[in-house]
Amino acid sequence: MKRIIAIVAGGDSSEHDVSLRSAEGIYSFIDKDRYECYIVEITGLRWEALLPNGTRTAVDRNDFSFRCGEQKIRPDFAYITIHGTPGENGVLQGYFDLIRMPYSTSGVLVEALTFNKFALNNFLRSWGVTVAESILIRKGQEHSINEDEIIDKLGLPCFVKPADDGSSFGVTKVKTREQLRPALEVAFAEDNDVMVEAFIDGTEITCGCYKTRTASHVFPITEVVTSQEFFDYDAKYNGKVDEITPARIAPETAERVSKLTSAIYDILGCRGIIRIDYILTGTKGKETINMLEVNTTPGMTATSFIPQQIHAAGREPGDVIADIIEDVLSLTLKP
Image 1 (cartoon, helix red, strand yellow):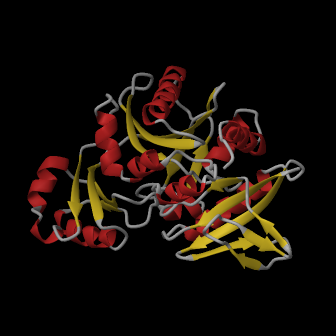
Image 2: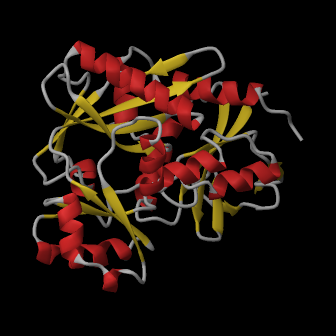
């Protein structure tokens, strides 16, 4: 019998609709001769499975089951592709752990840690990973901040961004002292914690990775070139970017980036596919590798970075997805 896969998408962040596009991408990649697939859309407390006839049916959160006609369906596996809460911060992972449903991503602790950029940066800094200087401001503290002290520490330009969000919403590149407080207001509209981060001028790259019990796979690196101020939502999803895979970097730099990506995967104890973004600074071939963020549910549309990198590695996204599903299921005892 085919294994039943729920592709879990949507969520409660500004990237809800982007997540649905990732779900459609994953659905198109998966081998339907091997797996029976359903997309499950989560919006707040409304959880619905999309049925083959185009209708929707409510998901029973007691066991993540739903009905298709007279048949009760309980998936064998949840492939999480929510960008933001609750699928990228550990909340949904905790739910699946409670009902003993195997899933595609890292566990609760890893998801919560990687979702908070400030916490992640300081954790990885303790392991020797190079990250930008930053400060954290919590809601309620913004009125007592001293703009001059922030600028003295971080310089200009700097970035103001939500600390607990995986998207590009609420991010501002601040160039003057006067822009700082309005940028904080924009970021606080997305999250209760805001990070102000030093600007790093260099070459932006991104590298995907996944591991199973028997193999480690680090994908070819993508170089990100945009005419925008930075790689924002408009650049990501409206085509205002050149994505070059493999990246135009020295072979020795590519090797160091790949090794660092693999090491960070192991330091954190990740599962499933991750993507790590970096900025390279300094002399070509001897660059400093500055880690920007770790994405634990990276985009999976046909044009997203990870499918591009998978194809550049001479593989197919469906085979990678099957690899992850089977590896997790092989380690899982059914309740």
